[in-house]
Length: 334
Image (spheres, rainbow, N blue to C red):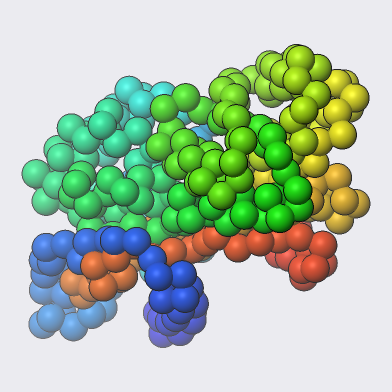
């Protein structure tokens, strides 16, 4: 377990530095309790005889490679601490709420969940906190996790990320950007596009069905054919960016393209100049810290963030640093 702690210290230091540098948004230290493991060891912060089970619940859409990096991070943290992970996902709000309730009913030791539709998930999260099960939010819900009762949050400030993207494309001369939202009702995606519009006037949003990439391509092709004044496309996920590249070709559009998040194909497209840049939220780190922080809380009553969200992004990935990032992407961690 000493090896796990040294790796934890390095990761936690990086996250804390990132949070300070980016002046992170709020997170709750939350009410603390003595863990069973600590009690069994005279208060010492050791794993002890208890093997913890943590439920990780997301709004993953099947086939979206973004979530592979989340899973890689949580798996690494679990392996370091002997944690059993119960992973489940549902892209619908009702389905994800049911999964959270199922985790509560199964009496897991902790829950890490995305909070992409906070109003719909609130009753299930309350059921967890009422049952004294600690909850950590990650990836989505930075403005709502405190109200829902989550102890900590790990993710990007999506409004800040959107503003950063908008500022950059505006400097490149964008007059009529198109921001593509692939999941209706997602507070994180809506915040990204709202941020883009704040710094890139003239931004227009379009809703597509991210669960059907052929539909995404058809919808975007039609839009680009209808409105040739669109000069920049901002997608909010790497698979959507690849569909948008096909739409550009089909429509004969000369619009530039930027995206949020990465996968191996997006890395290749940044390398060849088809995608101008990506804004990376470091999903591996989100998955790792969501699990790791619950372990720390359970064994020693620790919380991270000092009452504020721990930021894992935004960070630009472009032609200046893509070669360095590509190696991590090949490993499935970026």
